[in-house]
Length: 247
Length: 369
Image (cartoon, rainbow over all chains, first blue to last red; front, side):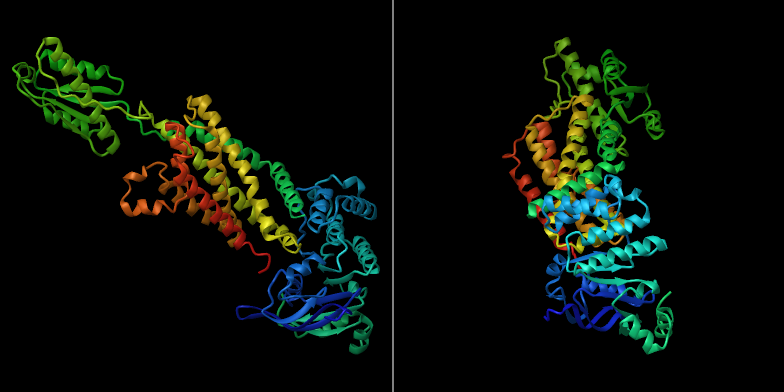
């Protein structure tokens, strides 16, 4: 495994019966990069991401995540990554600080570290007064930021974010991306899927998935140049216009 | 390290259990309801057996037989006729459960030293009432006759049936049901709650957040099983308390042996529950499968129908039905005061099942699909 890449996969395939959800995916993500993973609904983004996180077995293909083999070393990968799913997945009936303590303990952080990190998170998110609030009672925008903080609290090498800003207002969305930049500046690799094409502009590089395959992969500037477009929105429309899947 | 993770996971389970308003209520309310209502309703005691008497003797003795029978706690004389067909009609109408026929010249022949026979016809539609009721009636009649014989100085021992019921002297069906009801409660509570808990995590997506962490499979599954030991112990405690306060029934044996069996059986049920949850995608699916198991457990565990009266092939199957052993333990400890050593086979069987189902639940739990 080469030290340059946080993620490196070759010919990754996932089939469900006759349906090929992910078809021959090959790409590399450099360490510290913010990698945008774009695609229409049903293009296979989540399926690909779940394979990278060790939640799903690839049908075939090979690759490494954080230096570990995605086929045989999934549990090692899990120690070095953070993940937020599309569905909000903190425990609603636990308080903010109980959730943070639960997950960071599982990652093996000491009580002192947990306390220190939790305080940092409360400060950054300006939610010190919510620490003992049940998660179900905090507003959606805060929930997303909290989910991100919970997934990055143990300082993973890579964090996978599956549509982290769905249903979030523009101000909070902006704030969320500040959090991402901050994490990136600490050396964390960010792998993020999104439907917001303005967010795509914030990424170092983006890939556009269509029907289980990567149709385009480059920096936003290069893509705009290549397709001769002013915005990522137009690029996306050109690349994804032949998509057969989607709803 | 591992232990620290298990501890925080257990803390999470217990917090969630406490914050869910439903679960603590179920743990208290279900045993209360089941223990207060079911022993009164699910009752196979035979009482108020109505007897129609066909008295062809019409002597002092026959009137005494009728009077004694009517005075008995379990029997009442519904009618006293001379014609058998009339009596049979009252059985057909459902007014009487049995007919006692006293033949003509019964007391005269008895005095002469002959051996005349009374006969009893019982309605076999309700099998247990017919069987037990006719036995009560026969007992009542023979005891009156023997008393009369000794009073009149006829020197001949009257045929007498003497039945002594061991362990449950009054044949109180409640004493038989109450220990077994606690088994039912554990089946339902420790079977359903872990299933619902785990499938709920699947439906809300929190399980995904767990699966993407490095948490060990066994650690995670243990955090789902252990809370139900405690729940099982709570349920049995509530059950025993009600048994004592309401029905005055205390275990004749050691309470510790009941708790040990309860822990083992809770593990069997929660292991089964988690296994079913692992294999189900939705709550509906898991409830349906769990329900099928619970039906079999209740019908084949020897709860309502004694295993000894099942056909042989069914008896063989009951060895694969874990509650069978727990019910045997509960009844033996409660009524006979049996010890763990007396019941070592049953304890071993439960231990085996506990290991099997807990192992299965860890084995079927997949962090990756």
